Amino acid sequence: MSILKQLEQLEKSNMYPFHMPGHKRQMQGRYPYGIDITEIDGFDDLHDATGILKAAQEKAAKLYESRECFYLVNGSTCGILAAISAAVPLGGKILVARNCHKAVYHAMQLRQARAVYLYPEVDEYGINGAVTIGSVEVAVEAAAEAGDGFDACVITSPTYEGIVSDIPRIAQLLHESGIPLIVDAAHGAHFGMHPYFPETPTKLGADVVIMSIHKTLGAPTQTALLHRCTDRISSEQLSLYLDIYETSSPSYVLMAAMEVALEHAKTADWDAYAKRLQNFYMQAARCSITILQMDDPSKIIICGRNLAERLRKDYEIEVEMESYAYVILMTSVFDTDEGFARLIAALQEMKAEECLLPVHREATSHIQEYPIAQAIEMPSQYAELFAAAGLISAEYIYLYPPGIPVFIPGERIEEQDLTELKSCMDAGLAIKGLAHPGKIKVVKDEKWENYIV
Image (cartoon, rainbow, N blue to C red; front, side, top):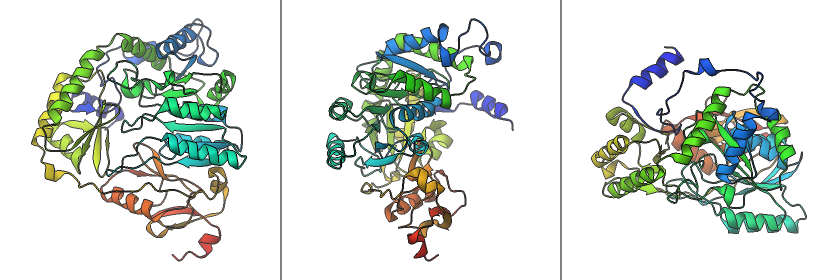
C-alpha cells in the first residue's frame, strides 16, 4: 500500500488521535500543491527575511514576548543544533541534563564539546523528574573551582511526560556565572496560553527557547520556533547556524500553516480545553487504573502494561508513546468532548490488576570517558549487547519516541542501563541505533583488550 493510500485509510477510520500533531487532523485547509512555491518575487526569503516572513516571525515573537523569533521548518532539531552551535565554541564545555533529546548530543558531537551531566531523579515508573537547582549549583561550583566554566547549559522543560523545571531560579544561578541557558521546550508551545498551563519559558529568564508548534498547537509536523530572549547568545550566530542546519528550500506551505496556527492560538477556546482536562481528571480519579497528572496537565500518563495495544484494538484510541510501565496521551485545544468521553469509557472498563507494579529505579550516573566526537572516530568493535557492561559505547542507542539516548558514544555502558534496555525490548518497544541486532559498537581501547566475548 502506498503512503498516501495508507494515510487516506487512517483519515477515514474511527481511530481517535491522542498523539501529536496538535491539530488532531481538525485544521481544514487547501490541498498543498496549489500554494507550494519557492522564493519567487514578493514572497521573501526565510534566510534573509525582509518582507512577509519577517513580519510573520515578528508576530510570533510578540505572542511569546521574546526579543526575536526564527521560523523552523526542520523541526526543533535544527533549532537545538543552531542554539548549541551558536553558544558553544569548538571544543567547549557544556552542562547538559542527561534526559535531553538526541539532537542535543548530535550538537555536542558537531562542536566536539565536553559535557558534564545533570541527572534528574527517576520515579518508580521510570519517569525523569525536574532538573533541580541544587544539582545545577553543584555542577557550576565544581567547574568554577576547577577553573573550567561552562559555555552553556541545556535542559528540557517540559519533558516528554510533562515535567517542568524551575527555569527562573536555574536561569538566575547560571547567569550569575555568565552561563546562558538554552531550554528545549519542544513540548511547551501551548505554555502561557491559559493559566491552567505553566508559563512559557520565554518569559522566565531562559536565553534561547526552542518549541515545536506542531506538537501542541495547530501547525503541521516538523514546524517549530526558536526564540532569542536575551543578548547572551547573539542573533548573528544563531542566524549563521540556522543557515547551515535549516533547508535552503523552506516550504511555504509549512510557513503559511505556522502563521495560521499561531493566529489560531490567540483566539482558540482555551477555557473550554482547560475545562475538558479538569473534567477528565475528576472522572479519571474514580477509575481503578493509575493515572498521573503532571506539571503540564495536557499530558495524560496512564500506568500499566500492554495499554497501547488494548486502547488501539478495543477502543480505537491511538496513544502517543508506550513505555514498559505507562503510556503517554497527548491532548491539545483541538481535542473534542467525544474523544475524552471515549477515553473515560475505556478507562472505566480497565482493571487495576492490569497495571504493571511500580519498581524503584535509581538514576544512573554515566561516566563519559571520551567526548562524543572523539569516541566516534576511535577504533571500534562489535560486542554482545548484554555482555558489554563496563565497555565504552561507540554509537547512540535510544528509545524512540522520545529520542533520549540510553547510550551515547564515549560513555561507559552500565549494567543497570542494560537491564532497563532489556525490559524495554521484552516489552516490544522500539529500540533505535543498533546497526546489528544483539550487538553494540564499542570503543576498542584497553578495556576492550580485557573483554571476553
